[in-house]
Structure formats: structure tokens, C-alpha cells
Image (cartoon, rainbow, N blue to C red):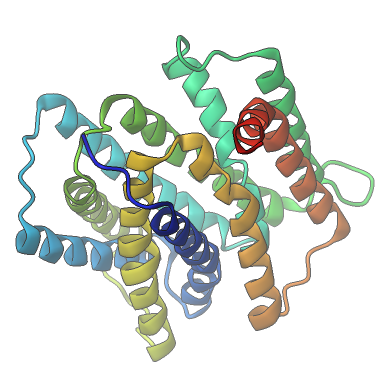
Amino acid sequence: MNKRPASVWLYLAFLVNILLFGSSWIFNKLVLEEGAPPIWAAAMRQSIAAVIFLCAFFIRRPVSRLHKKHIVLILLYGIFMMCLAHIFAFLGQQYIYSGLASIVFSFFPLAIVLISAILIPGKEPLTLRKIVGTLVGIAGVTVIFYRGGDLTAGSGTALGVIFVLLSVFFNAVPNVIIKRDGIELDPLTLNTWGMLTGSVLLLISAFAVNGAPDFILTKRMLLAELYLGIFCSAAAFFLYFWLLRHISVFKISLSAYLTPLVAVFLGYVFYDEILSRHHYIGMLLIFAGIFITEIKHYARLLHKKL
């Protein structure tokens, strides 16, 4: 049984994780604007992270026995989170602001609720409260589409939102399964082989869809990819799964409130991204949906403190 770290380290890791994930959206956008096709952008990011994890793995050499179910979890992690989720996140960011992409991705905790109700109905049944919260969150996504009296934000924006939503669900599925079946799986082992699987699949996909890279690797693109690979993938995902071993999925999902705010702020400061009123209303509705879904947990935590 792992000894629970001091609260100060958990809070610090949680804060750093929010800053890293929040800043990733603007660097994704930068790489795309420098001319990298979406799948190549994702492949470069994850390949850098995979190399870092491989080095860390062989330096530390964790003693962990891999059972058949662990191999399945690693493959799920690599295929869904590291490959498909990143492909659709980059595809989506071709069409929408970095801040808006992060707002749509904040639907993640509600996706966790839906996937948990399907995969672990005994532990996480779909209660009336969860249904109401999820519907409010869906209303928030719908409002993001709203423009000029109808429910369309323009074909490009709509496509971007749909792609990011697909990324949300591809992230949610392995999160629930790993929490259910792989709590004892070493985070370094999971990330090393999961990211390696994802990066190999991304490279194969990039060659298959775009052919050999014919874009210019500019200095800005290289620095952005290094930041994404080293910090937003390697460091952030290791911290995320380290936190997952010590705190609940619910507590980690609270980052959904804060990560979009970081992304929106950075998008405004560095790209002059100005979101419209209905985008902010949509964000508030998604946040309200998360709050309604988890209000019982908030009440329990408040009662403990009192």
C-alpha cells in the first residue's frame, strides 16, 4: 500500500498540473500555425514525451509485474489517450481558439460520469442528480454552438467543437478503466509503454495520412513541441497518474474548473483571443453541470472541514 504524501505536495502537484494542461492549448495552436499538420503535431509531441519516459524508465527500472490486464490497460491508454485523443484535439484546434478548445474540454468530468455509469454501474450509477448535471453541461456545449439566432457557430467552429468533444471521450474511457482495474499499476510503467504505443501509432498515422513530413521545422515550432513533449505530456501525465493513485477521480476532475481559465487567459494575452458572450455562458453552464453532478461530494467535504 502506497503511503499518502503530505497534503502540501498533493496541492502543489495539482496546481502545477493545471498550469501545464492549461498552457498546452496555446502551444498546440502555435505548432499548427507554424505549419505542422495536426497528426504530425501530435506525433512529435508524444514522441518527445515517450523518449523522456523511456530514459526515466531505464534509469529507475521500476520493479512491477505486468499481468495480462495491465498490458490491456497500457494498450487502451496508448490507443485512446495518447493517440486518438491527441489527434482529435489537434484537429479541433485547427478551427477554434485555444481558450474555446479548453472550455469544450472542460466537459471531461461529465464524460467521466457517463462512461462510469456504463463501465462501473455498481459503483457509479447514473442518479437523477448526475443526469440533471450532465444535461446542464450538454446545454452549455449547445450554447457554444449558438450564434445569430440558430444553433450553429459556423461549419468550421462546429467541426472544431465536435473534434474536441471526441477527444474528451477518448480521454475519459481509459481514465475510468485504469481507475477501476489498474490502481496498483506503476505510473512510470503505464506512461512509458502507453506513450510509446501512442507515439508509434501516431507516427504510422501521420505517414499514412500526410506522407513524409514536408513542413519546415521552425525554431518556434521546435521550442513549442519541446515544451509540449517535456512538460505538457511527460511531466503533466506523470503527475496526473501519480495524483490518481492518491486522490479520487472526482477531486482531480476539479481541475476542469481551472484549466480553461488558464487557457483563456493565455489565449487573450498572447493571441488576443476574445471569446464571445455565448462562449462564456456555455462555460458557466458546463461548470454548473459539473457542480450539480458532484454537489454531494462538495457537501461531504465541507461537512468534514466543519
